Image (cartoon, rainbow, N blue to C red; front, top):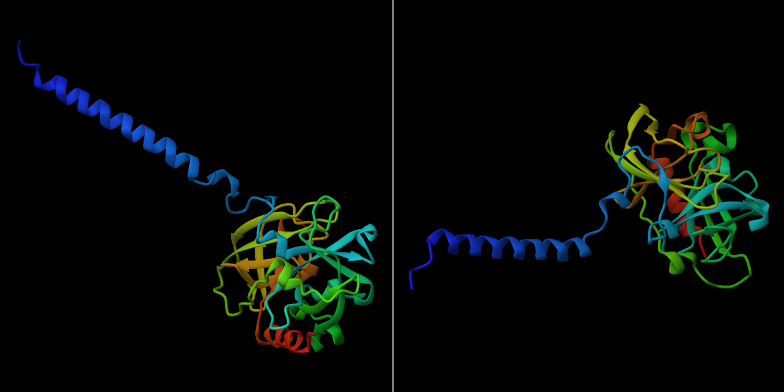
Amino acid sequence: MLPRPAHSARTRRTSRILLALAAMAALVSVDLPDAAAVPPLGVTAEAGSDATSKRVGALFAGSLDGGHFCTAAVVHSDDRDVIATAAHCLDTPDTTVFAPGYRDGKAPYGVWKLTGVSLAPGWTDGRDPDEDVAFATVAPADGGSARIEDAVGGFPVATEQPDDVTVTVLGYPSTEETPLRCANTTSLFSETQRRIDCPDLSGGTSGSPWLANGALAGVLGGYEGGGSVPEVSYSAVMDDQALELYREAAVSAG
């Protein structure tokens, strides 16, 4: 029997290698997340139901039937019951309730009433847009003793961010029943105001958290109440005053 040509053996080895690589690629593709699931920077899309979005919720006037008008987020505190939003969202705290993870008319983590509010003097005395940040303590609207952070977790609070920090904004337009998400690189509009370009962040998204590496680095508000057009939004820079408000809310909780 004549020996097989050498190139035939190499062809078989190459074929086996290619088949093995194809099989590995098929297995890997099953486990890899879909890159298209996360929109590119500057694109606004519906936020998925995950550990991040359940810490963000809508603020309602009185009850879920009252319509939602702003957004807020749970932040970490020792007493586990603090939320952050824009100061201009808390003009009527006695009748405002919070529904974390709100979606399609349902509040899967309950409805929470405000029990205390921390506002900067510059806001209460003159509605200074540079002080349009607020923290509030909450308790179950039904009178229970649960703590909101035990239900959904809480974001840490971060100050002193770079001028061009990339943040993710999650918020509820008043005409939508699901939250929207947009991430983009920010810029300083002024020494005290940060700007982001994201479409469709219309009325109702005031108070939305600006998350930098999973930490609260601002809330939608400030200049022009957060922006006069849906494509451009603002946040007061989180400074020492905002950090003091956060500490005040955390200490007074419970």
